[in-house]
Image 1 (cartoon, helix red, strand yellow):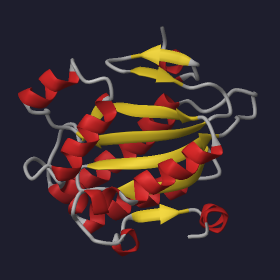
Image 2 (image 1 turned 30 degrees about the vertical axis):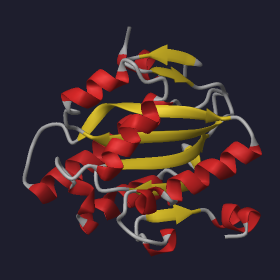
Image 3 (image 1 turned 135 degrees about the horizontal axis):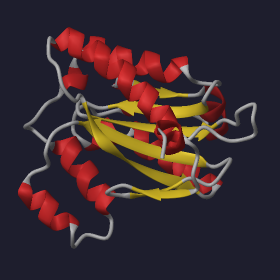
Length: 198
């Protein structure tokens, strides 16, 4: 199997987590910095049906570990990269850059050949470019992002709006601010703001 085959769009594939990407869907994707989760969290994951929420709660409230995305210059690199491929590889509806993880809401775009950009393709380019720039700022080498990401297909307008609220309220839930509008690293597309009355 060639590298190109790995990056091609597939409706379903599995790494450690299952990934489901039907064509022309809207997806909530979360990815984090590269660090090991504590043993007690890993043990809970095997018993917990809603694994994403367990990990996300831990990441939001985590007082230890790397928080490289708290550096405004690194957060800006991530934001600039997300904007750079907006309308090219995907339509970007919303994002939030947290101290140790990122939430995005996107719709992968169709290519000229009729296929759609895959998560693997989008994230490989985004993670690769941001990791290189962040490591220069941090004067470090090695993996910056964890190799795995979490993705979820948004199945209705109500779920879309609930997901936008979940993303923008993440800093509030993590007790970093008391109003989502105060977080400098959150963005919502203007058409989404208008539709939701934000």
